[in-house]
Amino acid sequence: METLVFHYTQGQRRLATQPRLVGVVSSGNLEVLVHSTEPGTGCEIHVSTAAEGFGAIWQAVMNDFQERWQLADVRIAINDMGATPAVVRLRLDQAIETCLEPET
Image (cartoon, rainbow, N blue to C red; front, side, top):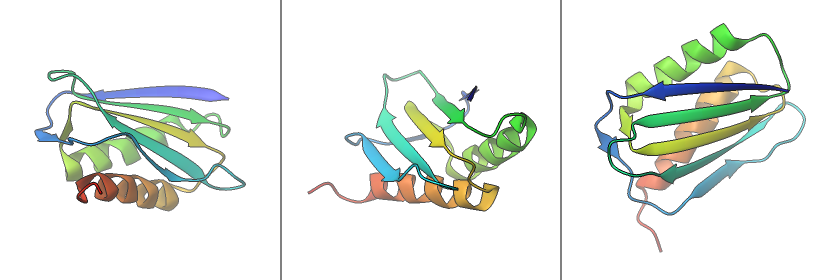
């Protein structure tokens, strides 16, 4: 297992939400857990992946994600079992979209 941490401080979009979980860890997939943090903490993404040696690809996908969403004061945990970059992007977008939906 490899653990990667990405931290971004330039985002402006805050998510006022309870923790949300999207996806399931299984062969070739991943889960994403999103929760709000204290003001001023930026966006922190923790990746635990079974596919070692792909840090540069993860960095590119996380940079693209943060550029599109501009998140602030949020922590994202990703548990990966070898998902492709396209699946990572899809799950991340799904997770943030669920945070933007009204809570019931």
